[in-house]
Length: 162
Image 1 (tube, rainbow, N blue to C red):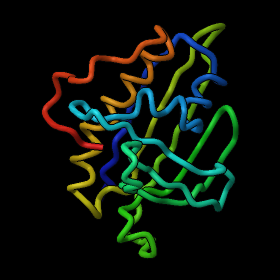
Image 2 (spheres, one colour; image 1 turned 60 degrees about the vertical axis):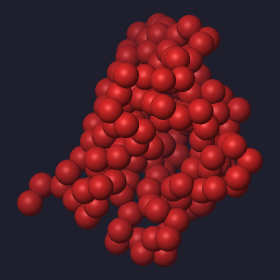
Image 3 (tube, rainbow, N blue to C red; image 1 turned 60 degrees about the horizontal axis):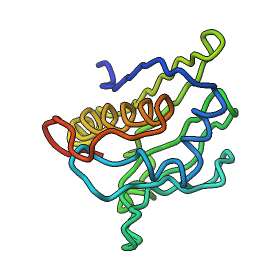
Image 4 (cartoon, rainbow, N blue to C red; image 1 turned 180 degrees about the horizontal axis):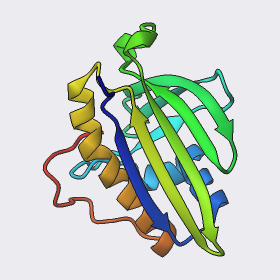
């Protein structure tokens, strides 16, 4: 049986270094990482070294952590791979999915960004959630890097997912 995966590819008029920074710097991330109808941003926090823990935390002051995982691979500014799990399932590695972020320069000033979220066959609800969340987050990232602005707080998407 094939493993359900989510793959999103976009091209961004920027540099690989700026895309990389947007994925590891909470100050940049807080600007673009929010669901389509959410007014609460989220940030990923880690030292981004292989084996390190990372957390996906709300910025509303609640300290609430939505997702956790381990950094699997970190090759700045080209590739970042980490596991992805609900906090209650952090110790159950067989329930974790995996995110691979590939940043590839196409030519001067243009980057191909590929985000692949894999191993989702164990959790159809997670697949449904990230299928709506990743497009909103990555569209917002692209807009921020190309224009310096983020998209409007309410996007015309079905529901908040990430």
